[in-house]
Amino acid sequence: MVDFEVVDLPEADYPEAGETAPDFTRPLVNAEYWEDVSLSSLTDQGPVLLVFYPMDGAFPATYMWNEMRDRAWGDRLTVVGCSVSTPYEHKTLIEERAMDYRLFSDPQNGVAREYGVENPLDGMAGVEEARPAVFLLDGDRTVEYAWVASEWPDFPDYDEVQDAIDALV
Image (cartoon, rainbow, N blue to C red; front, side, top):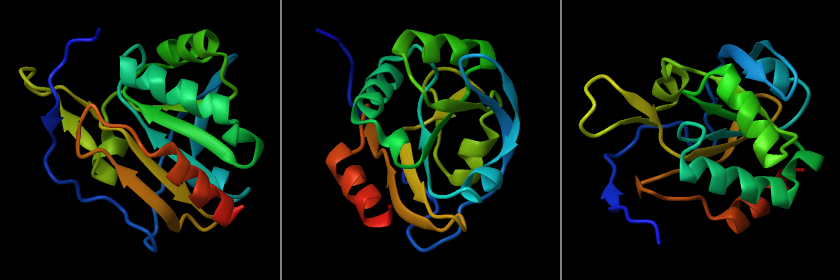
């Protein structure tokens, strides 16, 4: 059994349904390579599910990506992740989880801060990662659905995310 303490997280000020999600450009990693890609270049091609998650290797990342892989949402829309992990760590996660999803590398956590989903780590001055969060965006980067963790650990209601995807695509 995993031994951890559930911790309430401070309120987050994040883009909500009806608002425009901030654009950004970061290295986007797949199993073979990475290149700088903007979020808007992805939404220009259709709806995007943007998933913030803790660093690769943490149990929440593994749990979240296994669930999303098994639900095969990438067959219906673009699914991308974003975390503080490096491109090298992302490549390992993609390979180990057998995922077809791509992951943005944001080592300074600037994108999470811009989205209001940063999570300063207890006992580590100046160290933070993204808290789990899910944003479903339409082709104009309008937020159609948003969920942000309010405690640690916390996970989205995957059936609720599925319903939002079904309503959009």
